[in-house]
Amino acid sequence: MQENPKCLPAHINLTVWHTTRKEFNEAIDQGEQAVELAPDGVPGRKNLAYALISKGDRREAISVLRPLAQHDVQDPDVWRALAECFETLGDTNNAKLARESQRRCEGKL
Image (cartoon, rainbow, N blue to C red):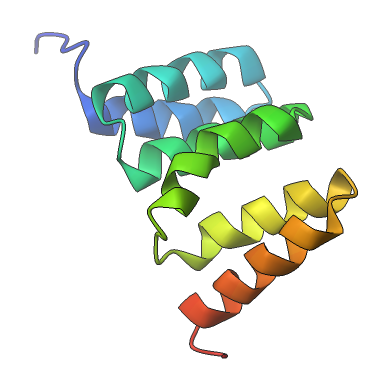
């Protein structure tokens, strides 16, 4: 089997794998490659953000998720991650907006 450096599912899966092993630099590298291959892709951006959050870099996680929010993505996990990042950073206004979007995606509004 040949390697395919442009295999999006591989980069997404490796992001998750490295994150669970607390190998955050490797996870972030894989996540960045996934986002490079599919800039509008939800899984790549979401998993990269999870790796950044796990490493403690919530501001960068917000910047990774911001394009999805700007396109009003209908994924409650994206909005939950944004809300938690904003809450941790003390940005209550954006946290509230993210929680409302999360509830809307979950059908609770």
